[in-house]
Image (cartoon, rainbow, N blue to C red; front, side, top):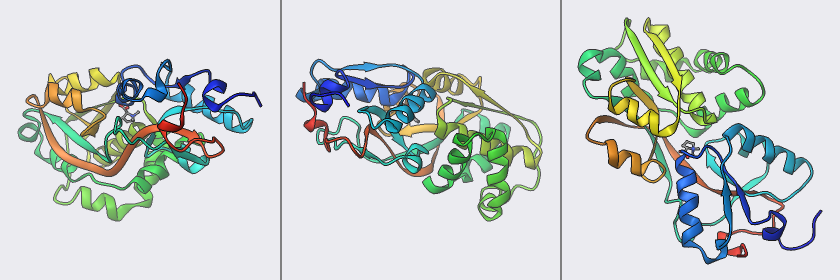
Length: 267
Ligand code: PBE
């Protein structure tokens, strides 16, 4: 492997994801907050390309630093660690919340009830994500999870016998949101709703729920990651509360990297 410090070996570059992601904004903030990141750059990419680069680096035990998040299958596939973030650029632990457009609860009380009762764990989401990362189609992985977890699904659908009508869910093609959104579609469709799921950019996802073009999303990371979007749209959306607790974002490296904190990096 190359000589020099870890920072030199990665050429002072952080491998990022989609430009509109909240974790990208948090990383830009870290670049300002930490002297040890002076002169570093954040490279936008896609979640899929980032995961491929991470896998390739680990195969060759090469240095790499990425914008990471939990829940994500990468933590079950690889030995990884979050770099400590003493200045708090990435915030504390987060929740993933469900948001609907205004008026949705009145228009479709039963679908709203299911979305409101939707609540699972990082382990649950991880099972769907891992299956998808191993090549299963997201719709099929969601179907499998729903079939294997009737008790949980019964809690979410409690009080709703049967549904009808169209429901549109907006999401971003992040591995975590692919999992949750596909599972919600299976649950709603099984009740009789006709659910459309539309992958779009993060800012557009928030905007389309705020403007009523989409009915709902299950992908609001709060309070930090999507904090700016929440502030912008909070009066136009309805927050149904967390569907998952214990989410997290940060800078992530393979375990073999000789750094434990962002402050261990070198400008
Ligand atoms: N993520 C996954 C998103 C939220 C879900 C951390 C990549 C983001 O950064 O906006």
